[in-house]
Image 1 (tube, rainbow, N blue to C red):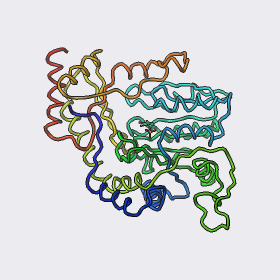
Image 2: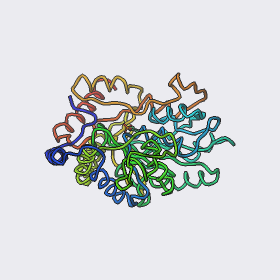
Image 3: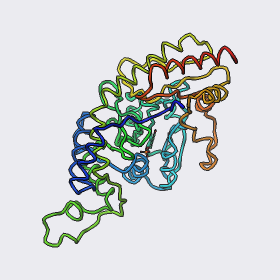
Image 4: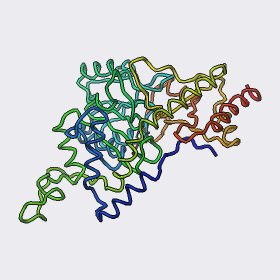
Length: 376
Ligand SMILES: *Cc1c(COP(=O)(O)O)cnc(C)c1O
């Protein structure tokens, strides 16, 4: 079976992990700190703006607390979003308000968000679908106009930028996931960027029980190092150096990963361009860079599910992301989301990872065309 997503891990990661074993310290330590510095630099920021956390979902949940969202507040989330975003809002006691998205990019636009703004709206959790940047100029203008906090879910946008600026650095908070299905992988892990360094300080405490930084794990000088004070009833969401060892090797490989993903993207663009029953991803605007996390096609003749089944029978696994939250009964959402509905019913993500061979790609293109010959 050709996987839809797949990590690229090698002997470099194993070697680095074995050094961690030898060091006899596998917890949060100097490798984690080194990764935080490297990643901050990678996105054109500094470590004063960045923390690492267990996972991106933890970042989404914590964003509600860190942005001061209270019960009764409203938070806007595009209907095409990761389930963790919806859960984060609901778990905080705030009201989840969904907005529609662009039918082709699956990103929310400023106009979609604005329709859902009320006097109670405090924040928006933005998803950059598949690492394709949202229209950040317009969205940040809207956020300013209504004093909204902006939380960027750029889980899959590790190499994405908009007008030369890394995604995740526009909003009050931005977060990247390094889980097993992302581009840079380390088992589980996330980086979270804060525009305001003071907020980053609060977050660093929040992710370690709310311990004051002068106590607990960072204290090595006080006389009674077992004493501590807390500033909030925080979580425990920190990295360990095994995770960091993997991530430090992976970050070096990102340029190569990106070249490969871009080549896969271009292969599909060329190979599938003349299929009249398919819409391919839109060309990126000049000023944007994508991480090419998804290659999402849209089947215009209503046969998306049949195509997915056909490909699977022929050894090619595909999927659709992200199931629209307005269709999740548990959220109790009413209203019309025609573009999110269109996307959910017609979009398919083809295999996209660094290990796809030329033969894999030829087979995928061949099978898509074969489906057309047989059924369209
Ligand atoms: C994977 C993913 C997440 C969650 O990341 P974890 O690190 O697994 O918690 C959040 N948002 C999006 C868009 C994702 O793809």
